[in-house]
Image 1 (cartoon, rainbow, N blue to C red):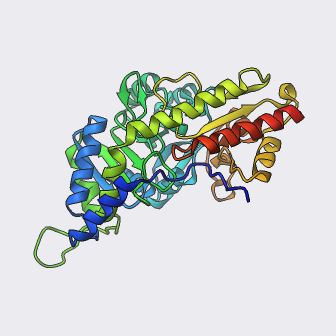
Image 2 (image 1 turned 90 degrees about the horizontal axis):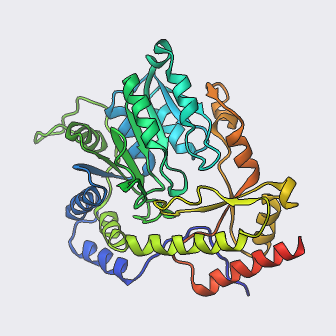
Image 3 (image 1 turned 120 degrees about the horizontal axis):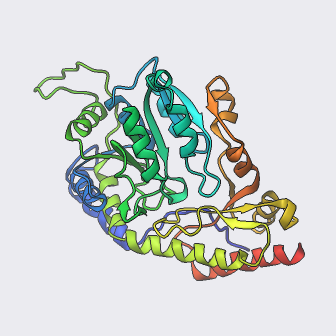
Length: 375
């Protein structure tokens, strides 16, 4: 019986178990609580920002960020086309419309040159309420180029760092580059709270607004008073305890994923027509390692490799289908070059989790080697 090898499974130990027991015994399992307060402070300190609000998901964090910046009906928001649907969905929740922009072929992140062209027209830029940058696979976007363009146009940046906790760009932590930043702590992320997210910023008023909306927008009076439509978005105390335990192990979790990416890079170094997406970035947290395959050179496709690995009980995943190709967003505007389409067609994400054992890693390398030998 061959054990299934997952793409990015949670890395949980007795440390997390002890933290959950501590939170349970505190008698405060529900929303907010002392573990959440400490988790917020510890993440803010880790990222080097002043304020943070822990919420129920990364999607909730994006939604609140947009609302806090005043995004609403009639607005346009720039969104990378190569991303998970949550980035675009959060824009739609506010009544605004996403405008999709294609990718940098080296990293899969937002193509800054395309963005610059889009914002070059003052009339067009005036309708854009925010730019959402996504740090793909834990590699930060090119913020040295992206931020000045947005600042010149007077448009705030929301950094979707859902995949990038612990990553850096030129020595600065991911999540700290936008007017507001967000993280996801979903079950498959670099650290997990089972389900959760966080909004971070140096702007105290923005985080206060997010926290207010996340707690049903209840006014600070003894009775239930509401002047805004709010949301049930706060993180639970149990999840906060789990997050604190995981955060304390973050460096080790990243090191394991980096080690695995190095193993993949060495394995494919001699295989023509292949490359690791975003390879060479020393600040990447290597949340996922995605292989780009040029079939005309390699003689095989990413889909064929994926099918072979899955036949051996090893999970893989294609890169995201671009948002401008999704039926739900068919009527949205897009500025594309074909890069995101090409990455979707030619890339595959390989098992990347820090919880993989040495035996499992050896099994992955063996099976990939078999596939390459057959080809």
